[in-house]
Image 1 (cartoon, rainbow, N blue to C red):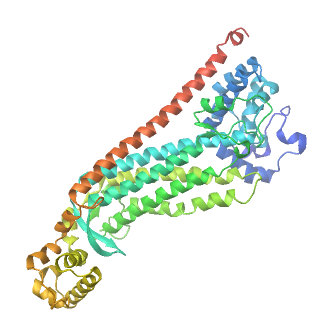
Image 2 (cartoon, rainbow, N blue to C red):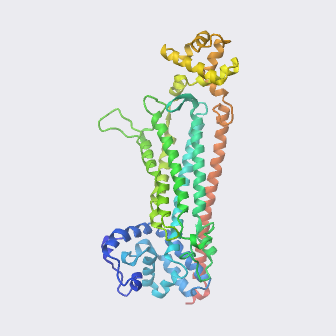
Image 3 (tube, one colour):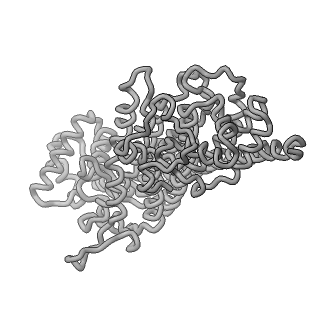
Length: 510
């Protein structure tokens, strides 16, 4: 681990430092404290990924005959033994590449340790281990996202025909169905998942061997390294090995997912107000007040919304970091915020999963409010078009006038007879609806049953949407499991390649 006391430098006097040859001076104490230590800490968090890259590179160098088998064997033996706490990190040495090289030098000598940097630079080494780390972070988000989608779909199954009022501009609009609403959330989550999968594909290309942007004069087998590390392929153009434009895909996918979580949390928090009373969070996901004994605050939803607020800056941060340098070096460390962004996204998915699994739904309250506020007014207008032959605009005007007069007279829409409706709507000279036709037009349940167009709220359509959501979820889970299996397979392949070198006759007789 990095210790503040190491800022002054503790490298052995005989150990050459990267700064010795060209600069002739160690890093200034302030540079160490305010820049290098923070950079090292971020890299140290990716220690396992760095070791994996070192192992794959050492295997390839040995298999290609670029370094002697004895050197490759010595490197792989020490790398296999190496643990984070063994490195003895010293800021004066520089990056984790050099920290590990310094440790290896203390075990097998400077010449053998230095051979590990043959055919690579800190640029492509750093770009590679960052991609490995980001790849795992995306898988963590995908795992939590699929669990959340499953919880939403399961909750929707309980509310295929739970009628509720719908809203636009936070004003009553038409009758909704709560299960239909939740399946809409599930579909958005699936779209977010596909975005994350595309980001994963952009990340999962190997830049090792691009070196400084021109490739290498050494006969590197870049595809072998990519296979040992579980990448789908290589970054083809060596100029793009240090490119971080792909992090924009990650930022955009994570930010859009957080927007979905924010919308769900906002709706649930609004509907949990006493004024609505549609849903209620389990007490385990709530807090209370230090002064108001009656309070049951939905703090889990507030936590999601707070985390989502910062997500709006993620794409802008990537653009700010990556677009200002032209074809020069990109400030790769500037995208370090993605580590915490992906962690936060995974955590908020998990938190929302708990909310959805335990959500209390007040179906009776939803049904009670479903017909209030004129939610079936548009259906009444459609009825006038169908039964009386009015244009929709004329029908809209007539129903709007009817609603206004009912409000002025403090009358419920459903308590008016057909004759009164025609007078209030200014349709006294038109053919009349019957009382039954008027009642059917204003009935929320009837409206819901008749909305059978694809994607509508009719029970059979909601059931179809639910079945489709379950199928998509199964496909998504299968794709995630295949990705994880591919990475596990690559890890086994790397272990076998290391074992083959260590157990070779030449290595055994050394």
